Length: 120
Image (tube, rainbow, N blue to C red; front, side, top):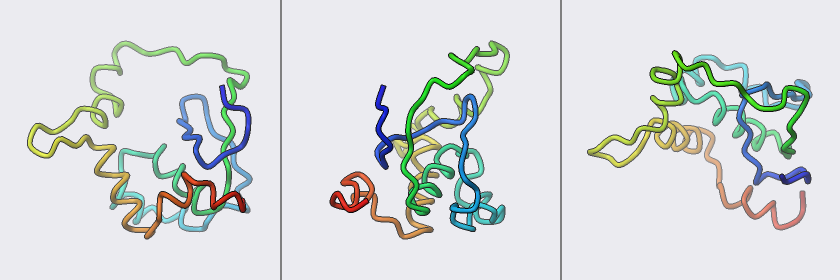
């Protein structure tokens, strides 16, 4: 597990995600934008808001340990909706929504992947 804060860590909100709310970009609260570009990709939305807010992420097991799947929800939940690829486009809902977030905010993903050239 990576224990160094980095822009390259991508969190999922399975057990919760903690942010100092005062440092987050205010667009995180724009429900109209979220619902237009990423209505079922809250993890992607929060990750890109963290990037935009210059917040590095650290992975941790936390106090909850491992997530316990609920069988009834696994066949119809967002997990299934967001990862199943469309046969025509070859993209899944997560792909489409991540592209929408990047386009909306005008983000250059390489800046984050490269860690701002070591400046951040």
